[in-house]
Image 1 (cartoon, each protein chain N blue to C red):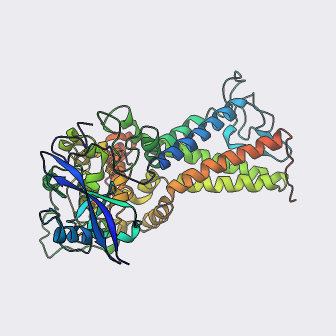
Image 2: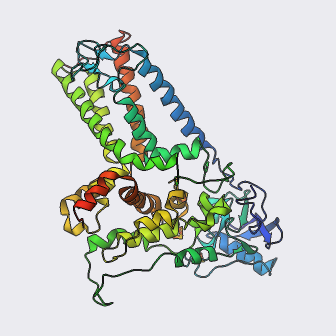
Image 3: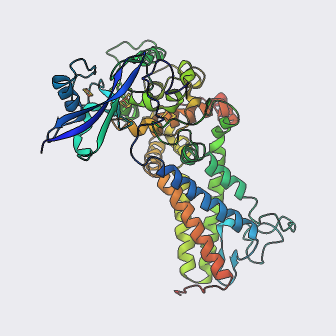
Length: 249
Length: 260
Ligand code: SF4
Ligand code: SF4
Ligand code: FES
């Protein structure tokens, strides 16, 4: 059934802004992005919002709904009661451009800081052969849609602007883990995970995993296994000695 | 809050969070749960009595292994290499610090107390109250990386607890046996589901295909590992229940329900 919903949407740019109230029509089966589009069509033609697929696959429409980092296109209106006010703001970790649009270039910078896939010498593209059991673990991480909700929610940078320089964030620490676990990657990424990408900042409080729309077990399957590898290398004298004495695969 | 969500380039929103759900409830419950356990465990560890039911061979895990001459006769399954202890030393003092260390450095408990006790962060997308943050990059928290060593000791203690539970069966069968057994099975499940264990058995390998046995072990541990939080809380509960049962029977407050 159609009803009028109370919406509070953050409007502004990098100099100033505020939450503004709107009454908008909602129909059965709609998602928050539909309502934002209706707002654009009927009341606020200049409302800025980024979106593309409306299917939870492009990762463009990340925002915060009632304070929770979510995809606008994957948040059903049926999860709210009819008299509930739905508050929509841009992601609060990245610089705001206008309204619901943020500048996510932090993430591109961090992505570039991870050295790319390094196949063993002498193996040309097209000659890559690997077994499914070996590549399976890293495939989970390939489900990522680059929505940056995890990067936005991680308190290491969300609550501490100054850490942005030294912390790659869950998405890119997961990228390091993906390559480290990849059967054909020959680079050694363990020390860099701690020293350059800031894995030690993560205190495994799992907010990245909680908000990931792809339900990737970022903390359990990428970050903690990387922390254990770092412990092998840097904090475990016995493993260190073992690795010196015997080569392992 | 000028450094975090209040930083100059970000959307100007003064609220610490706009969450409308009861985000403060889980950290509160965690605090209450942890506090209850710590209070109970401290009192019981220092109590120095009602830890052993000689007639049925029940020994509470809080006093195991009991290795000193102060232990009640029969409670020392591994002999008494240590002399009498002053009254203020808990009789289980050999294992207790390691068990405490195991849980303190456990990846699940870290999450739990970082969120609830230290509020870092109290809940997702709720600004933490601290001005600066270095996480586990340096002392003291970098010590959390020693978790695997506590895991190794915890395995030994689980063996000891298993031995205690098995020895109790030589005295017949009662409800206490069932409780000790269930407790020990769950303790194993919690210990084996540890993230360090998952890494050690196979997670550290690059090519599972070259190590089929370890891959199998890793798969099993991974399955348990997904339940690590539930096991962490369940075992706190069973530890208290087991100890409470032994205490009540040992003090004569209740009598053991005998099956055989
Ligand atoms: S688990 Fe680590 S990376 Fe993920 S949100 Fe928490 S601190 Fe950030
Ligand atoms: S890991 Fe999940 S939350 Fe993070 S960017 Fe990828 S899809 Fe989004
Ligand atoms: S519009 Fe593509 S993920 Fe929402």
